[in-house]
Image 1: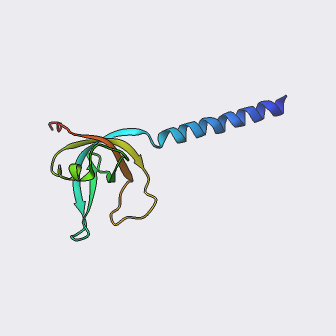
Image 2: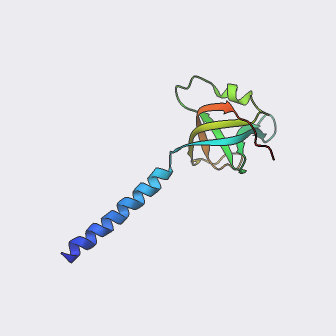
Image 3: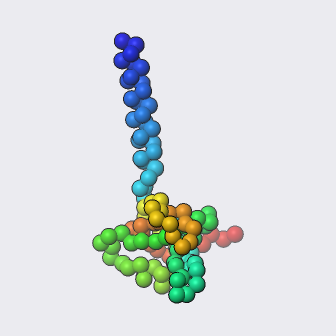
Length: 113
């Protein structure tokens, strides 16, 4: 009886740990900030810099009704991107906090300081 209670408690701890760690990944988020280019031409790379100082590479959700060029054309505007943030699997030319796969975007109003 004690052995089965111990095993049950160990399994429940593992299950809870799995739920908490897997739930944090691939969650839809909204971030606000600006598009910046990093590097020099002809190797300039666009990325999104958030208000918190995080830098994300950008990709578009498959089947989206907009293209990355539409978003890049809004450089200089304060934007809100909604999407899923994933860790980078390959090293990139600029140090980023991951890649945001954009599901939607809009121009946002900047907070007054």
